[in-house]
Image (cartoon, rainbow, N blue to C red; front, side, top):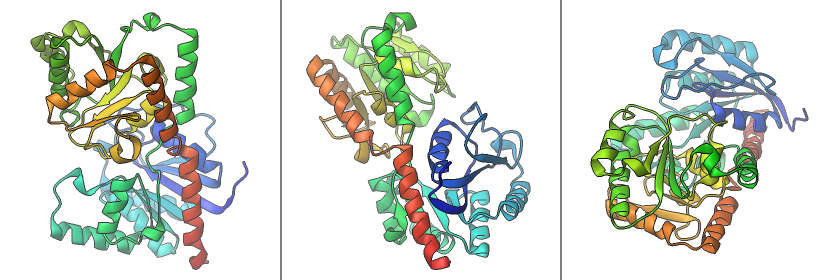
Length: 382
């Protein structure tokens, strides 16, 4: 391994999933990296990853699910681990988690750079002035660098009076090369019928949870079908609404054109992306929406909620997709019609536009920018 950054970097997350592994691999190519995960599992996501032959060390603070951990014990274990590793920089997930805060405090104590990873935006939830003042004080006191997702996130950091010259973008990335190469290979060597997929379909990937707004998506799809639309809808995911949504599809009369295929791992997803016509994400609230990155890296046009944190950075209206108000059935249905009415040449143009636009949001680009920030923060401290 050829490192361009001296010293040991510690990168922290609650629990390692595929998105984290992609980032960590890219960062490990440029620094001596150790990843600290707070727990060995997380009930919210249920990730299962192959941890063999990874180019970085992993320290797991506690076995079992994150949701079942004792925070005081995790805090103690985290401090002990940092004292043993003695990193020259810590990269930290958020500012509300007690374990993340103890990492920042350790960094202050040892006088090493503390970089906040954040995808928060002002529009994510109602904001209250007194809470924002406390938050501004906390992040400006404990962190001396920040890694953000895109334009809404940097604007929120500005509102919190964080110094923008101490920030770097592209926090929200996926393994673009994996999705691009896997879907390209499938399209050239296999047929959608081999995976029991319809000829033309809109694809949703994500949790089947209230904030994802799937009932409104189903009603919009029903209106589209009733007006003569011919595409199907494929939904890949699981969650608390898994039992009720098929019944809702039957109620709307679209059950024969709506396919619930269950939760899919990263290894199982490429066929669904490869043969979809377009990707949809109708969320009422979404800090970013990494599945949009996956879809675009797979060469898909996308139509997504304006409330997705990635909307401003990843979607150009009419160029690689469309944006809609997630409360409007009519706007979602209209996007479906716009996709159906595109010619093959127009679909190809939108596909290429998605590939171009997502290119900057790669793990390698994220790592390069992050290393540059670390170097700039370390210089005054040496």
